[in-house]
Amino acid sequence: MQGKTTVLVTGADGFLGSNIVRVLLDGGYRVRAMVEPSRRTGSLDGLAVDESRGDLLDPAFVAESCRGVDAVIHTVASTAVWPSRDPWMRSLNVDAAMGLARAAEAAARDREAGGSAMRFVHVGTANSFASGSAQMPGDESGPYDAGHFGLDYQDTKREAQELLLAMSRPPLEVIVVNPTFMFGPWDSKPGSGAMILALAKRGVPGSSPGGRSFADVRAVARGTVAALERGIPGDCYILGGENLSYAQVFAEIAAVLGRKPPRARMPRAAVLAFGALGSLAASLTGKAPQVSLAMARIACETQYYSSAKATRELGYAVAPIGAAIAAACEWFRSRGML
Image 1: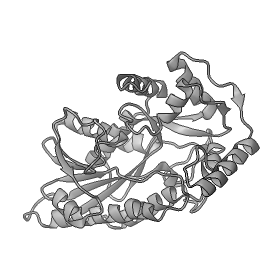
Image 2: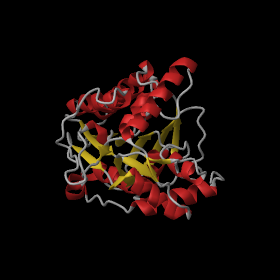
Image 3: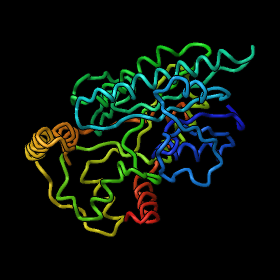
Image 4: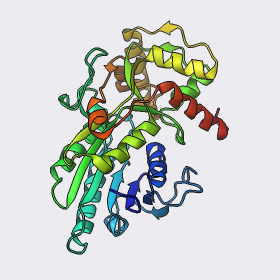
């Protein structure tokens, strides 16, 4: 794809979405930014985008948003991990994604004869594939263990991935990117940045025994646009980073903040017990827990992944996580959050 192409980006004002928008604009693309009607994050302020405000579950709005665009990058998803089973989550993570893809396909068919195919990049999650160890990280060939953590987020993201890939046929070309855990700027919620803010406020008593693949959101945004340009329809690409234990990533965060990292290493049994108490309290009060049992289970596992395929086929480059943390801290300070 070339510059001056119009790309519809859903969740354009979100953490990953706002970084993708910047990569697209830098590459000469026109951007139609789909955002919620009442949402105001400030992450698109000053950018030359065509805002499209409405409900992603409204078929008429979605169809209108897809008219006149050449490609779609779909970033919207509910990532909530409590309650573990949320009926609304499937509507957003699966139904909305399918409705958007059908609207994109219809828009492509409505074009004049000879028009190019509609590229549709869906942002999934690396957890749609089995993770691995530091020595043998998971990749796109890994099987999916449905219900492993009992989380609708992971199950619905995998379901959407399979359904969308099954739709990949002319004139719709579906490519899936599967990011890992990201740090970086424009984290307005905040999401992953909550780890940084917690450590800055000395609210982290210790590290759990697990680990993750920690990625720079800016690298993931560049990888997503590379998938739009060069990805093979019907394929998936894990966009990851450095495979680090939680103790290691807290040390990285502490170094950027100029603080001492938490020294305590919490045993698995203690982490799981804390999570179980959090879930129990939440079930009684109806308030989201700081740590649920599902979150505790995740924190005790090593969710390591390889980005070798994306590097080989898309030119994806894994970025040092320290730079991503520094960029996140700089952005939080600019917003008075740190």
